[in-house]
Image (cartoon, rainbow, N blue to C red; front, side):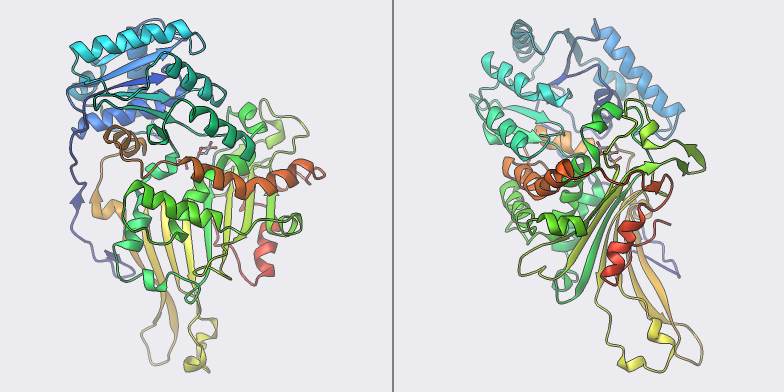
Amino acid sequence: MQYHPTAIQSATRTAETAAVAPPCAMVIFGAGGDLTKRLVAPALYNLVTAKRLPDGFRLIGFDRSLNTVEEWRDSLTRMMDEFVTKCGGEFSADHIDQTAWRWLTDRMSYLKGDITNPQDYGRLKEHLAGLDKTAGTSGNHLFYLAIADRFFSGVVAALGAADMVTEKDGQWRRVVIEKPFGHDLPSAKALNAEILKTLKESQIYRMDHFLGKETVQNIMTLRFANGLFEPLWNRQHIDHIQITAAETVGVERRGKFYEVTGALRDMVPNHLFQLLSLTAMEPPISFDAEAVRDKKAEVIQAIRPMTPEWAMKDAIRGQYDAGTVLGKAVQAYRREPDVASGSNIETYIAWRLQIDNWRWAGVPFYLRTGKYLKRRWTEIAIRFHQAPYTLFRGTHVEQMNPNWMILRIQPDEGISLQFAAKRPGPTVTLDNVRMDFAYESYFAAAPNTGYETLLYDCMIGDATLFQRADNIEAGWRAVQPLLDLWGSSAPADFPNYAAGSDGPAAADERLARDGRAWRPLE
Ligand code: BG6
């Protein structure tokens, strides 16, 4: 650990080495798309450099947009090179290890095909059978759906119709489904019902990329591998919890998607609820996937159902106006490409919610997320109760600051604890100090996209970091009243926050009514 203000530099540790994944053929539907280029291919490359992929690994691209494997390889190689020359992408590296990259590209093949054409699945099936015989992929097939969500159920049904997902003779067949998983509770339920006609729950890997972040995974370790924190982790000691996912990006080129999505759907039932559930869940009986997912489902189910009256008071929506973000002038949401000039879509949401269980009764959880805010910052901030004042009455300590524990998810990943210390000198003057653990200075971790662990887990069959059908539905159930209310109420008073600010004033006022304040995005 590293302590502030007197820093004690700890020894640097390297990331642990794990076993090699079993042989398998991984098929990417949507091989020519952005997700494949920006995240999946770099993550696979990282798995190669970490020596986690077996000799019998093969990568099969399936798409309409490219013609040959050479074209596919070239487009991925160009993107990898760009990551080196232009920093700031999802993946960055100072060089590409050409031997590792060649290891991967040598194992690539490509099928030009249409996901809506049943015959193309027949060709894919034959191709996979060939690889199983000649390339040692052992009949294990991982299908990755990097495609628009409206095609999810069709592709799963087509895989079923072509008899490509039946597991036999110890050979596994798994399907990875990206978000968005549904658009609201009815559509999420319908999608679950549809894909469960073809697949067993154990074959479905519903992905939420927040769970690929090391710091998110570390929440469970922090809570359950230490004796120190868990005894304090409850209503007796915690005043409230703030969960923030502030972004400095706007909607970029995603206007079309965002106009039917908005910040609530895009971030809350999935990413923010992951952070919430890991923070608030009861200890599972083991780290087994079912045990963990049971506890996560329970805590989301314990979110107090919103009534329209509470929603009006406790959920605040915002939409960005023109402003300056990180020194750059940007335009209002309503001026973005593919966005309606009078759009009523929120780019910001703050929500005060309550978890009705023994541990958390009376402890508010404040969630907020938004685009074009002052700073890119994702954290979970736990505010402990004030110490009794009496001992220090008459000194300067009436303004004593509270204890916070901050789990910094990104950037600058780490954990800090804020507490009071006496300033050196003859009077009792208290100051706030910080004990700080920074990942970067403790672990020499290789750069990663966050998809490495998730892909590897699919290959080894560990579903702990994936969403079960009931987890997904519980998330949508909790936000549905808000979707209903905002969908049917009068248009909001948008735009109501300047790009580059902390968000709408109403979000500050909501906390002020509770005698609290958001942690500044400084
Ligand atoms: C995605 C959302 O799921 O998560 C985006 O669709 C958002 O709108 C992104 O920007 C945030 O993820 P990260 O990893 O950049 O914090």
